[in-house]
Length: 275
Image (cartoon, rainbow, N blue to C red; front, top):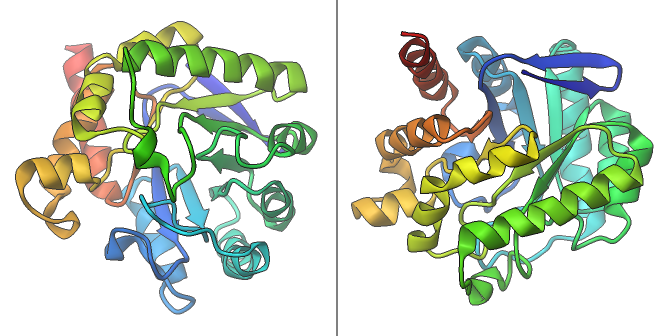
């Protein structure tokens, strides 16, 4: 069991939970994750009704090869969305998907209570101390390089050991800075080949030694659709298979586009575990 202090509200994780993806971007790799001002609330409502515990709102695409948008544009995208979701669903736990410390601070002020940083603080040196000051949980992910060039850095001697070593150092840095609740994310698809992603998934349980919630972001990624010879739009079944493997290997949070199916996978996993 894990507990996360989300701006004074305690999120208790007694079994795996789901984080639903809401991208207020025009260029995220999966078009089904993109939301506009007109459908944001209906999609958020549907995700919560389907069992999402956290809603992850991002205004900056981090797909391979993506270029960074300006801070003002990112703020323009995420702040109204966070405020609107928080107003309509005050009981929801909202995370902001950003690697910019100023965006993180303003998003938390607007209603977010978790910061989800794909760079683990490497793209903004102020991020870790900013999150420490905000007193909110921090998702610390493994990535090398930036989203624009990360696939050129997919070189490892032992990917699981290197990701583990990185997260050991980063969690220690976060703790030393004053962050009380750290969630670790191995960063599937970020500076990793398909073969490396499968190796990391198979050996995911090695991250349990950190005694932190483990987040797995595999939903509709190229590891699924390229392996199956299909597209992100047709990758739901494959995503559910990999989510199930992640659960078996220790995942605590599934970050997904399709909440209902992920919640069902967790229910079946729990029944299997308790049999």
